[in-house]
Image (cartoon, rainbow, N blue to C red; front, side, top):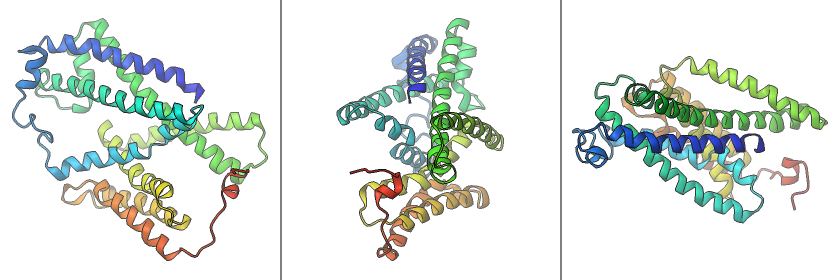
Length: 303
């Protein structure tokens, strides 16, 4: 966590600062200025769901909601806090910061509706605004702010996955007597491997939004239901959790890749409830299986 804490903080300040400077410059190029930008939205863009139906909107909201609900990045950061009170303050600050940053992003993309009415790549709208409507210096700052956001998100996921590979698989099953030096080296090697694998997988998607929504749907349908049930449902069993993870992951692959999202329904709307149903169903059938003590899971005294 320490290795990315300072770079993440710098990236966050750069991101927010770049947007705060860019928004007044962009809104000044729109008739009516900042307030007029929201009062005179084109037809179809002036409602909560825009041109999307309710089901289509839920298809985008579901993956994001369940990703945030079980996001390992946040859980690791909360777990790294020095005490419970610090973690609670961090959580409250996170909610406030998230609302503020989302408001900045919405305002920026709203400016793009006016300045780029015929855009064909909405996933790059901020980059297009930076290049076409801002002075070179400010455009560069805005693009750097966006890249900092992408990089901090990417390195956080790479770090968490490499940590899982190192401690949950390699150290637990393959190299139980690993030295401290090996435990420092292996995450670095696995992080490079994870990054290369992510790049190769990204090549199969047409744009950033597609790979993002697929990843969010996969995580939200497989990991989050099992995590939520493990924390809040006392009768959920280990077998039920594993089956729920497999059901959510395989269901997402089948719905998105094999069936090609029939009727335009996004996979998360189907696979998230399905994963919960599998967890509870299998758990109900395996209630009398032997429970696993925490000491066996973590390999130490947790009392």
